[in-house]
Length: 280
Figure 1 (cartoon, rainbow, N blue to C red):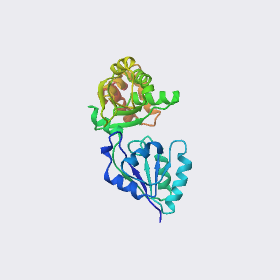
Figure 2 (figure 1 turned 45 degrees about the vertical axis):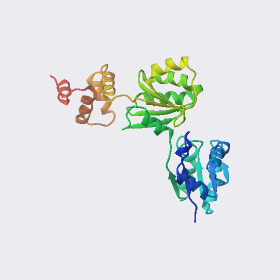
Figure 3 (figure 1 turned 45 degrees about the horizontal axis):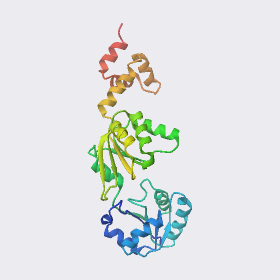
């Protein structure tokens, strides 16, 4: 019978956030797979946990996942921890989880801290609809594509950024999105926790003067639905109604459906479109 993979959330700063269930599980499993064993040993020592550890990180995630699944299939129980927060969130743990599920190995999650959710709740921005982007890609083309996509996003957006890239990233976000509200969070749950509600322009000006320190969570206001609608209307103003209709006909819509979509795009009634097209 296969063992179980336990995804164990660990504190993002304050050790008081460690749950008793995670402590119990880390003591019970046969091995702990840790992103950085040098970092995790401090946590284990604090809670008097003596379970053996093995490294599991970005650079060995595929090979080590195979070795861990072999141990799980042999009946051992494995706990996965990241340096801070919930494993498999912007983390190589997702590879191990997928491999376990593919092989029918039980996986369970022990919930706890996550920097992205903690920052969202502190941001003062809408929490009803949100998306998590993690770190922007390093590749320039990939990053440009993501920024273009995010510029049209109506949900609240959550990103991570390192201090030495913060000013560059704020500049890229400002150029892509224009003026938006943003809350920058750092040192979450720690003594010097900082939550800074501002705008993209304001954040860029501030950090051009002040050196960024610590890892940042950026929570950014999404584009309002009203703004998106106005931009959609403006985008069609340069085209004739006939061209607009042809756009949807090429997508396979019949005349009635195309007129309905054209009317919606232009913020007018379907009757207006019909009268324009059938005027004698």
